Image 1 (cartoon, rainbow, N blue to C red):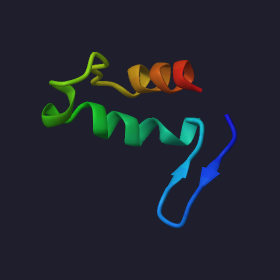
Image 2 (image 1 turned 135 degrees about the vertical axis):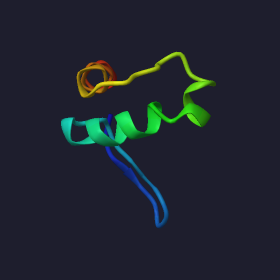
Image 3 (image 1 turned 180 degrees about the horizontal axis):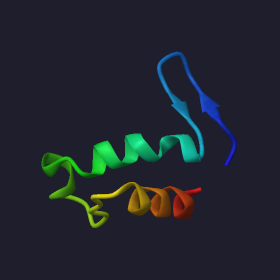
Image 4 (image 1 turned 45 degrees about the horizontal axis):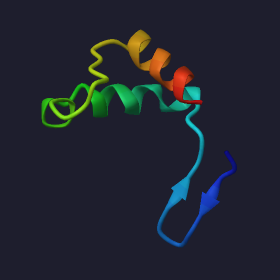
Length: 53
């Protein structure tokens, strides 16, 4: 996937630097009650980022 950029948004593939943010987002109870990917460790977040690359 190529990076797509507008004035307000950047869409790009996931990278290793996204692991901490992925963990923070997906470990939030208000978010993960709607998602299948429930994670609680950096290793789980890394696995998801690598899968979504």
